[in-house]
Length: 126
Image 1 (cartoon, one colour):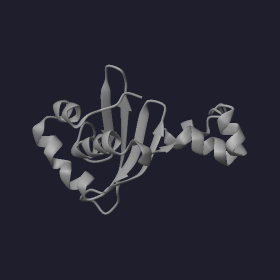
Image 2 (spheres, helix red, strand yellow; image 1 turned 135 degrees about the vertical axis):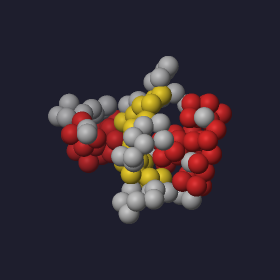
Image 3 (cartoon, rainbow, N blue to C red; image 1 turned 60 degrees about the vertical axis):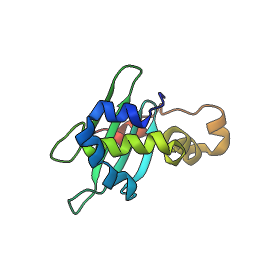
């Protein structure tokens, strides 16, 4: 997946939204981070009682985010998720690796287990 820099994220979101994300990333409010193919997912604790569900697609030429917050897309929660990916990619659980380990152990992962039964599709759709 494409690597991102802080400057690229700032350019994508603009200064105002980018600097708002500081409260979220710096306060460790981005958690339960998962990577699947070219997408990343996490929960971000915002101003509501429940965390927001945030998704980001990172393509070669397009980066987009969706969020359950009132803004809905390309919000400060999405910026915080992307910043976590840029700075801490190893903190994201690789969904295929996790699924392979659950389904068949390390051997299945090493043999390239996939999501042919649609388990991850169902888990992350919506």
